[in-house]
Amino acid sequence: MSEVFEIRFDFVEKWGRFAKPEYLQIYLYILSQYKKTGKMPKPAAVAKKLEKELDTIEAALEFWATAGEMVETDGGFVFAEDAPKPKLKAKTESIEKDTASKFRTRPSYASAEIDAAASVNKEVDYLFREAERILEKILSPSDFEMLYSFVDWLGLPVEVVIMLLRFAAGRGKTGKRYLETVAIDWADKGIDTYESAEEYIREIEVKLSNEGKVRGILGIYDRALTQTEKKYIKLWTFEKNVPTELVAEAYDRTVAATGKLSWAYMNKILMSWVEEGISTVDGVREKEALFKLKSAPTKEKSGGKKSKFDNYTDTNKPDYSDFAEKILEDMLEG
Image (cartoon, rainbow, N blue to C red; front, side, top):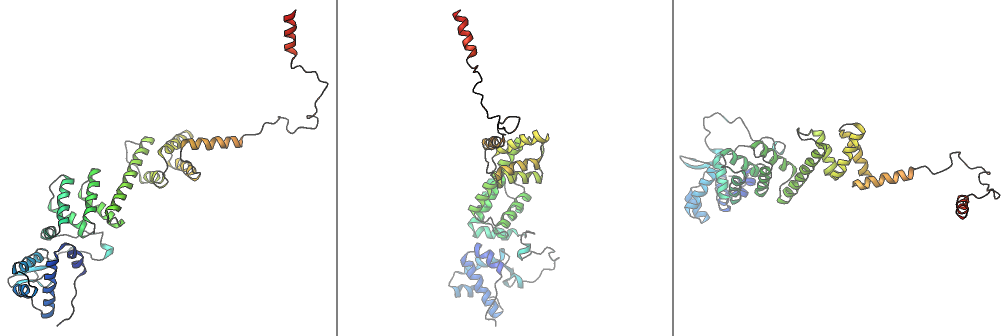
């Protein structure tokens, strides 16, 4: 007789969220009696011991069988791990349990398991109904499995999954592969709250908006940007917060100097302005005007330094400054 018994971590992680507390109580009591005596207790005995209706005990047993934790046999319900193994080809795909493989292979779920989760968890049921509205279609069994995996496998809250679906639908990308890729990316980045998802989406929208503006400035309409080009745009508009008017100015100067679009040349121009704290085109021009003023040569005679004779003033030299005016007055008087 064992005084202690183990409960699987994945069981607690999953059904601690999705199962009714009453069903969990019944399951744990039956498991404790099974571990203690080696025999499954009768439903009537469980009902009497827990002071519950027999119908409640039977409903709980059917729930756990639907969820795959128990199996109904001719002799009653037994735990799935102790059920007779069917003479079928064993599953070749195993579900990785460790963290390292968590985001590599999505586990498969039986329809009965998903239905059971939705029946006892209003949030999961709401996710499915909201997904049909956002994606504008009736969900297929594979859709249900994918969406349920986002909650169960990746651990994303329902409200975050709904935000993900709205974000994808807004971009016109609702294919399964795209949705799963984004969900894994969000889980990997720790985007697991409404606030963090909202902030991430805002950053993405700003990035896409700036990317479109820069494409317009550079006249790139008929092709996709390369990864290097995207990195430059991200650096300028997202990381360094360079206004698009400065990007346009740098582009004009790049073409004037090189005769073509040179991303590296543009980058040097923009980074030099960033280092100098310049954030407007007027700021660029003011900086250049100040530089020209400081670098302009002082006005001196072409002969170089003055000699002591250059400073001599001849006091006997006649003053002709009023000579022309005097002649004009004489002519008028005559």
